[in-house]
Length: 368
Image 1 (cartoon, rainbow, N blue to C red):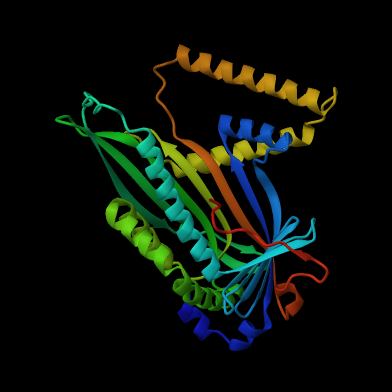
Image 2 (image 1 turned 120 degrees about the horizontal axis):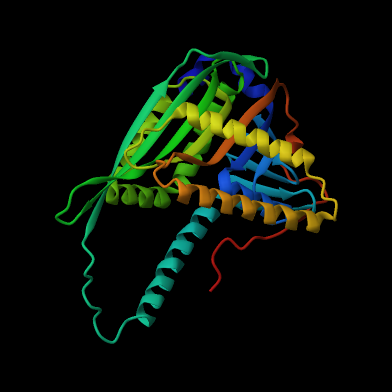
């Protein structure tokens, strides 16, 4: 990305960009039903078609979504969060955040030590009779270019699939190694080499990495130590990072699928894509037709009852046909799609708290 930034005209970097995008997060299956109900009661949940605007100028970036905004000034090493509804803002430096993270880690360790001391048994616990089981995780990273092309936000984009498979094997003590299932992360990306934010974002990320790297040096070392203790995780992430580095360009549409695959089964990409598309269509249709006759709460109670009945039917069907093999299940999808890209000057006022907003001092360090 840095090489691409150097190769493109510098006026593009200085004039700024405004990017409009939409984020859609969906929980699938029974979990999706529960989360949707929680969202209706105000408890958060699926986030459908959330509009997001990103302003980029030099080494400053502002991201807006709903009533909130976040500003990152890479040169100054400062985060600013804005609440447009409450007309307040908070600001802190990279160093202040790094210090707070260090104190939080120390506080957590101290609390864990206190809890362990309180729970110390008077007599040593009996040795466990359960056999020891070793878990081994194998990583596989694959890239596929099916040859699909499409214009997104006015720019040519190529579809590229990146599949990261984490397959677990369990070996009981003195036993036979068996598959324990897989977790698959499928990234369905439409990447453009023509989109102008490639160079601008690369320039910003380079400055951000340099400044943040200095402030978060201790945290980076802790992360490296964690990787050293768990080389399986390090290997998988490194393999994925290498494959992603090969994909030149900017994702204009990116969808991530988190899928659980039963033991001794292969991940079916087409099944994941089709199932999620069908579920999304059903969910959108249900939302459009959702007009409770007995008031909002009464309508929700009715839907909860219906969901329980449907779950009971599915359970009965599974018990009556126990010979049916288990299937893969996508648990959550996250989609981010660029709708428009506007190169041009960005007002400096966007990278500062609005006039008249009240500053709130946030306590980043954990209280004693």
